[in-house]
Length: 295
Image (cartoon, rainbow, N blue to C red):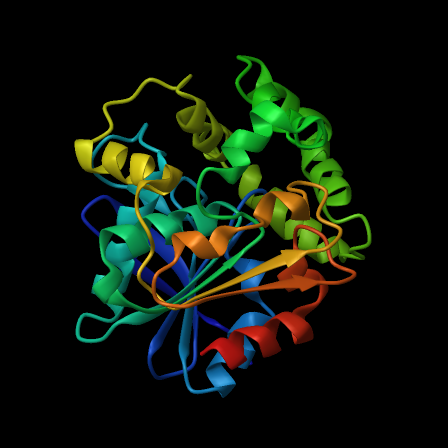
């Protein structure tokens, strides 16, 4: 089954998306370094289960283009608004399943806080909700070592380093974060093809620079408020499933504990053994079963 390529235009961007199946919407948001093809193993399973799976290339990732608004806005609140806008465009009359990995998880949390009525279920992978990760960057030496790239990306030369030797760093991050993942050369080439497009490296780094405040922007108050609430000042009121790889080299499994206190409509957490940060790519059958059980 081959996904259909569609364009979904919102007030701020024209999202290039992969779409498969018919039925209630399951919106799948990718992270870094990745593309919409991240969910190539989840989309057929969702379609077979009666869902319409749609995976957009996220803000700043070609061929998605920003068409209006502040082109420098890559804060979490803006990513959450993108997710809600996509749900409104693709499923105006019914709530959607929202699935997010890595930065897609952060966007999904922001969307769940902003518009819980637009979500029927939430599934997030590899990045926990709440203040735990931020606290670990201050108090956990092991996590500080894992997160070296976040600090490196604040440097003015980071874009050149990312692109050096045909984006060798992208493969390095895949290997560090998922040490047991035997990805194919075609997977890596699809990733590099996206990052070779003008503007994509700068946009990918802007996610991290917006987080640390080193990228100056005129973020709307709504976005800033969502970021504050994601830091632990509000609970998510959507039935939620969280999945994390036991061998994640990006975010340690210990950082994901005690999230249940931040969810008010049911929460389940599962650790996927033998998987790293890209657990849905590494252990697709196990991850798909967990998602479909949740739904």
